Length: 244
Image 1 (tube, helix red, strand yellow):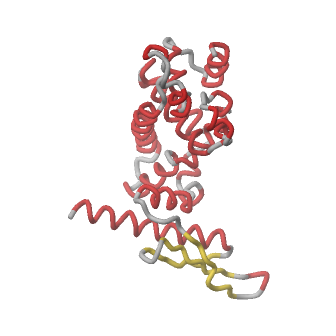
Image 2 (cartoon, rainbow, N blue to C red; image 1 turned 120 degrees about the vertical axis):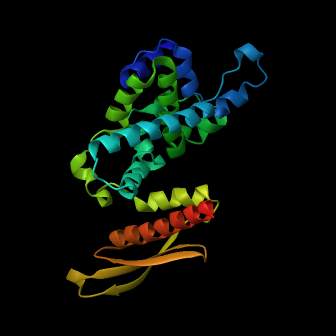
């Protein structure tokens, strides 16, 4: 395990003063559950609390970065860019680039079910690593890690057009899950124009409550725009309820 952790530290470009923090960050609850019968001092702690802390630290650092890079952006635009950078979809990609699946400590059942490549486990591992690094060395090494491994090639040029970076379908799915709603469904309701210049109208729907239609030059573009409209409506209703 020590050799494995050292290899991971090289990928993270950070040496832990307390390696047990990194080990905990990579320990899934399935592994901890399988050793529940062990003596208290031999039971590994899982990474769920680290995910909680890492999510908060990541949110702060991304907010700080966006405000510094884009001082002229309105709050709504900054929020959309932040939502992309902290989304499970984006964190999964960061975890995949770091090959975190190779280092996860999983229970047998999770291992057999393909846990090393599961999107949620890799995204959660990124947050857990952020927490472990923060507890071990403070905010500065985490800031460097987030800038290089999470933000990566995201830059000012891309940031000026959030439609280039925000996957509204993924964002809508995550918002629906967080609110206990059914998964979004997409239906192409209309195709217009000649074959070489078609436009498509796609409807995005969550149950019978939230539905929006949008037009685009491809089904993918129309679906993304429809998802964006539903997401904005959903977020707006949540904010209104909170204020009320």
